[in-house]
Amino acid sequence: MPLRAAKRARSVIVRLLQIRKLLDWLARQRLYVVHYVLRFYVANHIVAGLPGYRIRHAYYRHICRIPLGPGSSIHMNAFITGINIAIGAHSTIGRRTYLDGRAGLAIGDCVSISPDVQIITAQHDMDDPDFADVLAPVVIEDYVWIGTRAMILPGVRIGRGAVVAAGAVVTRDVPPLAVVAGVPARRIRERKPGMRYQCDWFEPFD
Image (cartoon, rainbow, N blue to C red; front, side, top):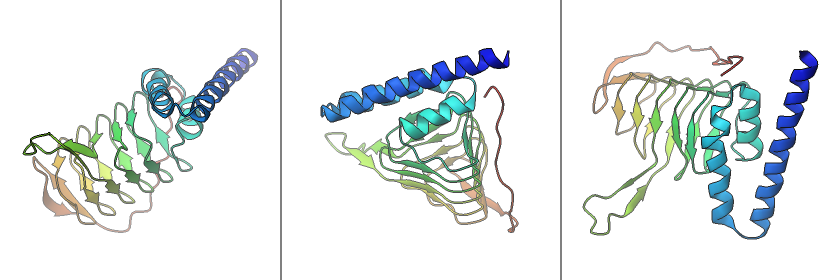
């Protein structure tokens, strides 16, 4: 069994290297749109559903070129758009999370993002006759905890140690150590300081 598993792992690595060669060739041919679409199409529709985090993380780091810090994990079926994403160390991204990097998304160290969270950096101006795009980066500082099915809207900064309750819709900045909940999210209490944990959560088949 160990030998068979090792052969399968080598086969997957070979395929990933072949994909990277193809993507690099497309980039050299100045087919940037094709290169971008193909890179993230494969990430979101094939790689994201693969069990075993090592394969996914290798693809995100080396093919999508997303900085993913040591001890950090992106769980299965995350959906990623845009290349302007950086994730610090010892952070975890839950299943089915949507990470929108079109305007820039920075996630700090020791951040816990629960399943089904949506982090959005682009929207439309509903009063513009041309329905213009409005882009604004999102910053999530160290030790932030975001509950399941919360939504973070463009331009928001969530301060160090803050907590976003499950189902909250965050439309404006959250101060450090604040606990926010509701739609739109409002402060309901303060969190105690002094966090020192790490979110090194790796499942063998997730």
